[in-house]
Length: 172
Image (cartoon, one colour):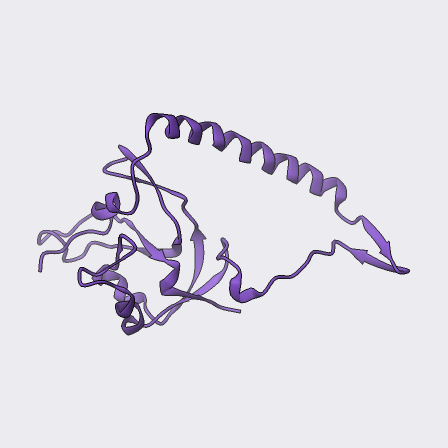
């Protein structure tokens, strides 16, 4: 079986954005950036403020949700499932929801890692296309070293491995 790099099959993870969507994406990047700056400013002035309820002082109270339903966040510790568990989620081509599980990723199974990034868009084909993706994370320090791939020299792209959240379990 010929090796196919995960990066080269990313075009199947979603659809290419049209011109209008690309323009909107650019505009939409400005809003969250402004929102983050306003939130930082707000936190700076609200930090330490308290409120009273039934005679008790409550500091920065926020409701808790069921941790089993929480989506992954940057910095979360996750355990990669065993290869057998991951294999059971894949189709006959080794793909789950248009993302392939590559053989070099197998060595990371049954270990714990930190979520580095949660991409919402993926550039592929050398950055020529933007694809929207869901339930995909990048784990800190896990990338393809390319040894033994393609030719005797290997691949020197050093691509990040993309992981479906179905392949991971959040550590408490």
